[in-house]
Every structure is written in C-alpha cells, then in structure tokens.
Amino acid sequence: MRTVYLDNNATSAVDQSVLTAMLPYLSTLYGNPSSMYAFAGQASDAIDNARESVAALLGAGPDEIIFTSCGSESDNTAFWSAVQTQPEKRHLITTRVEHPAVLNVAQYWERQGYRVTYLGVDNKGRLDMDEYTGALSDDTALVSIMFANNEVGNIYPVQRMAEAAKEKGLLFHTDAVQAVGKTPIDLRHLQADMLSLSGHKIHTPKGIGVLYVRKGVRFRPFLRGGHQESGRRAGTENVPYIIGMGEAARIAAENLQEERMQVANLRDKLETNLIERIPDCIINGDIENRLPNTCNISFKNVEGEAILLMLDRLGICASSGSACTSGSLEPSHVLRAMGVPFNYAHGSIRLSLSRYTTDSDVDYVIEHFPGIIKTLRAISPYKD
Ligand code: PLP
Image 1 (cartoon, rainbow, N blue to C red):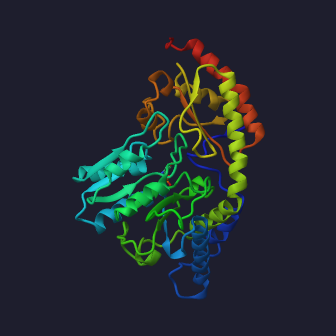
Image 2: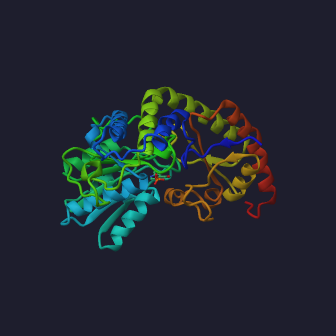
Image 3: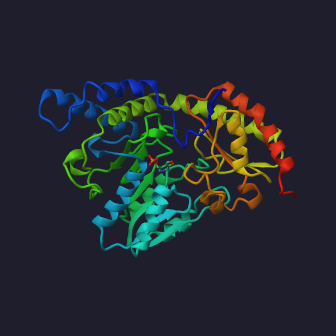
C-alpha cells in the first residue's frame, strides 16, 4: 500500500543529504569535540560549521546559537533563563494557542506563584494587539509568543510584538519550531531576544533543537555541568545530530523561497478541491496569513478520529489537532480558544505538507476524502 505522509507538522522525513552528512559522525569520526587532539578536532570543526549554517538561516551570529536536544528543551530554557535572571519580576505573557512545550511551562511557573497572562484569539485564531500591549508591564519577566501555530498554521505578528516589548525593555521569546524553514525569519529585523527551533520539523532525525539567545541578553543555563556550548548548555555534544541540523539549515536557507511556493500551491489545490467536493466543511485559521504547508479543516457532524482511521486504511497519515493531543477526543485547545463550533471542532483534521509531497499524493487524497466523509456522515449519530 502506498503511504501519503501529510503530517509534517508532527515530524518530517529525514533528508537524504542530512543523513549523509551525519553518517561519518555516527561511525568513524566519534571523537569528543572537547578533546585536544586533531582526531576530535574534526568533530568540533564540523560543529562550528553547523553553528554557522543555523546562524545564517536565522540572520544571527554563530555565538548566539545554542544546540539543545529538542524544541521543548529550548522553550523550557527560555522561560528558565528569563525567570532566573530577573527574580524581581513575577509576570509572564503568552497565548492560549501555544504548543504544550510553552503552555505547560507557563502553567508550571504559574503554580510557582507567577501571574501569567494567556492572550486570547478570535475565531480565525488571530491575536489582538491592543490586548497584548495592555498586558505588557514592568513586572513582565518574559513575553513568549509563537511565530507560527502548529495546528492551524497562523503566523503571528511577532516583529511588531517584539518591538512593543522592547520599547518597555522586556524580554521577548518566540517559539519558531513550526516557522523555521517554512517562512522567512531574519533576526536582524526581528527584535526577539530568544527563539526556539527543532530539527525534526525540518528534516533531521528527532532529538536536536536550537535556542537562539541574542548577544548581550543575560542567560542562565537550564542544564548545568560541563562547559559545552560556551557554558550555556552542559552535556557532551550530540555531534551527528548537530551536523544534521547544520545541513538541514543549509538546505532550508537555499530552497526556502522556491519550496514555499511549491508547497503552498499543492496545499491550495488540496484545500480548494476538498471544499468544492465536500459540503459543510470549513478551513480553520487565518487564511491570508499562515504557513504555506498547513491545512486545518473541519467537517460538520463527523468525528476526527474516525476520519483519521479511514485515512490510515488508505495509507494517508494526518492528524486531528496537534500530535500531542490526538488520542483524546476533546477538541484541541487551539480550536477551543478559537471558538470553532462544537459540531465542527470534533471533525477537524490537520494536513501538513512538505517538500516531499507530490501532486499525485494530493490527487490521491482528493480522490478518497469525499467518500470517507460521506460514509461517516451516513452513520453519524449527530444530525442537524
Ligand atoms: N513548539 C511547537 C510549535 C511545536 O509544534 C513543537 C512540536 O510539535 C514543539 C514546540 C516541540 O518540539 P520538540 O518535538 O522538538 O520538542
């Protein structure tokens, strides 16, 4: 059976040249980059190159890049550092639609006695700038706003939001895990102090992340121990994965413009055809301002999990809400924050494409999707 992989916001296929770049560091070039001899120097030189590639993708300096184990670690570290370096401040700002890697961290600090403002969204998942600027206070230790949403793909106005935070001298972090490699990010213009990204969303294996920390921003490590990463993240470097991250960043930077167009064209073809062929469905999110690869669509009076099962039988991989919330039958926190009507929210599917998605993949989904919805509606207990 063929596999049509449309769950790239959950994770993505490892790029062949990423794997090729990594392989020597999984076999013959196993030296510890902290060791003094030339054999290990090969690993530390390769790490330097990887750091430069990641920095170039973001418009950052290599010394502003810290390699971590994943996007979640980067997010946790940003909060930790902000809180530890400014113990006098007791307020945090984030949104209701963050990934759990931010939301659960904010809730943790709330339990430690911090006041947390969770910004709401409208029915398209958009934030309100007035609500945001009204929440900024001298007591705010960190503002953390995602660059792009993992479920509906909305791109948030982080540039304007970072500027507003900077005017008040507040620290600004953005979780750019879904945005990196899909939409341009240039930290020469974006005034963020910290930014998180994750390799496995841009075609590395799972287990490598990055935290960007702007030069001059006070920082406290989350992991203490050895002096790796200039004392900002202890632990012997995950050399092969760091090399893979560098190669993935290089490829992303080289192909970003072309790939965005190609992926958006396929996504739009998929979306237009589903909307035309299936009655009573809606596209969730801010259609004018979202990631090129993401389609979040709700079908009235059907259960999202049932759709997923039927898609799975055809080899089509998709997700209902975020991967981390599937398995629970509650509509996702993002769709709930947007106020998507109950009888639609339950039938929501996220289809997320990548550079590997083909026209024939999209045709296959268009061919089978209407029949699945028709079958499920015929047996659905919900009717109105
Ligand atoms: N932030 C966002 C927006 C995500 O989509 C994800 C993963 O889905 C993460 C953070 C967590 O990244 P990781 O899986 O690398 O920990």
